[in-house]
Length: 284
Image 1 (cartoon, helix red, strand yellow):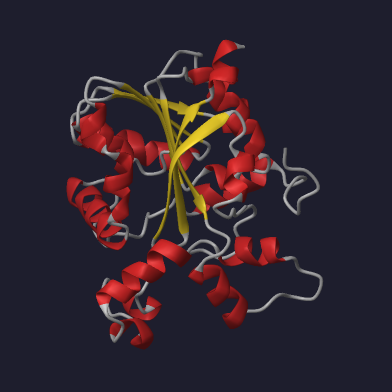
Image 2: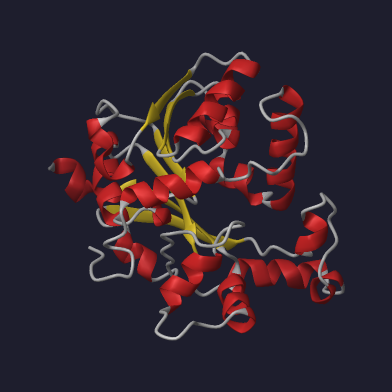
């Protein structure tokens, strides 16, 4: 269990306010927010920059299955699970994110999604405890003050035949090295606090935990890890990226693609884990 961290005493309201102020990926399109064009452009940009997501999620695999997504954000992955024929339950702490995710489902005429506004640390207080084929959470659980509590809750929705897919941030990554070299730690600041400050597009995220390929096993108590993959280095120049232009920074521009992919697989920012509930937990 995670204790005595810089984030243990952060109020959940502070986390909620941060994501309400700027839902993740909300600026992925310059089009009118809430239109079909806007949502199409958000999806295109997201998967252009993070092409490993559809490979990790395996949307088509869950046709006719029950999927619980913890932290749906604007609903990009949510919609793709639903399009593939899954019955989706989507949860988010941010009311602003959920408003747009619901609008997205409406725009695309998808009625196989149930949305819940919920604190995932107390998930069973909001979402009826039922068995799901897949529990999926991409880049979310590490932003809550007590992520270990979310893991405890997730066990309630799985059996030994269910699958759990989670992405958390990779501590031993190029991005953490870049943060340290570019900004450095403030006096008295921990590495965890530095990572949180610059982990997102909008600086000052209240909570961001990070894990190594080794420590994530301790974090996922009660799970047998089936697969661990490291991926994603953001190669683009940020000023141009903000203008929807995709110009790589000079040191990545001249790097052979094969070498860049090797770097991503070793020092990527995304630690993607596929797991199953251990038999010991299932018997309880």
